[in-house]
Length: 403
Image (cartoon, rainbow, N blue to C red; front, top):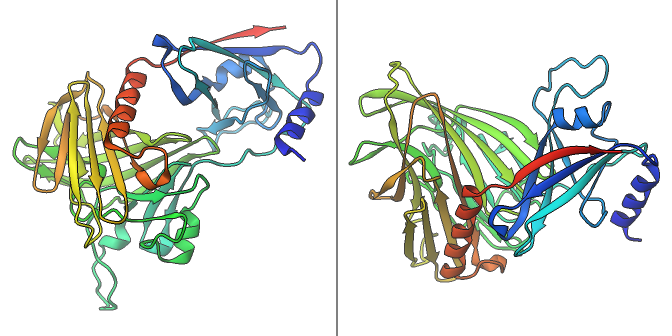
C-alpha cells in the first residue's frame, strides 16, 4: 500500500467542495535551479484567507495537485488562544524543487475535515545533557554539534571528566538521509563508520565549520562554550534554535553573542543570525571573523586541502583525507556585510562588519564525498556559488484567495 497516496486521497475526501482556497505563488528570479526551496507564508496570511484554519486540518497541494508535506511553526508557545484560532502560529512552511528555467510555481492550501498526521521529520535539533551538554542538529544531508557548559567545567572531583573550552562547530558526516543524532549518542561512539557515517572532524580551538569571533586585524578573540540554548521549531521541514554565549574580551571591550540557527531539509548550508552585544554600550561596528578549520582531520589521515574564495562573499575549503574521503566546508556572507578575508594559525576566515545589537546573517555548512552527492572540490565550489546566487535573488511569495 502506498501510504502517501492514501493520505492524499483521505485529505482530498475531507476537503469541502467549493470551499475557499489560499493560492500561494512563488516567483523564482533568474529562473535559478533551486532544489528544496523552502516557501514560507506568515500564518496571518493563512488565517486571513482561511478563517479558523488549524495546523492539523490543512492540505497543501503542489502545481500538479498532489499533497505535499508542510510545517506550521509555533513562535508563541505560551500564547493564550481561547477561541482556538492559532494565535501562536508563526509561518506555514513547505518545499518545492524549482527545475532549471522554472520561473514560478503556484500552490493551494485548503482546510480539510480529515486530520493530517505529522509528516516524517527531515530535521532535528536538541540539547544533549547525557554527553556533557552538547547541542546537536541535523537534516537529511549532514549533522553538526557544539559544546556547552558541562564540557568546560573543571574536573573538581578528579574523576577524569573531559574538560574543553571549544566554541567551534563540529561536523558529523552522514551516508544516510534519515536522522542519526539520537542513534549515535545512544551507541556512545561515532568515530568509526559502521555504515551510517562518522565524526571525522576535529575542532579543538579552531572555529570548526562556521564558528565566529571578533577580529582585530591580527588575531581572533573567541568566546567560551555556549551557556544557554532554546529550541524554537523542530521539523519536519525546518528546525530553529538559539545558542547564547557569555561575554568575552575582544579588542578591549566585552562582547556577548546569541546565534540563531535555521536548519532546512535538503540543504548542506544552515542560515545563521548572530547578534553581538557590547557591555560598554558602544555602537561602533565590530569586525566578525567566521572561520573554517584547515586541520580538522582525524590523526593519521594525512590531509591536504584547497581554499576557494570569491568577491561574492563565499569561502570554501575542500579537504582530502587518506581513508575517510573528502569533506567540504563553506561560509557565505551576503555582499552588504562582507569585509574581506584573513587567516590565522587555525582557520581560514571570512570577515564581516556588523553593529552591536543588529543580527549578522551568514550561511555555513559542510558536505562529505562518501555521501555520494558532492564528491569533488569543483562540485562543492559550484554548490556554494549556486547558494550565493539563491541568497542574493530570493524567491518572492504572493498570496491570494480563490473561491
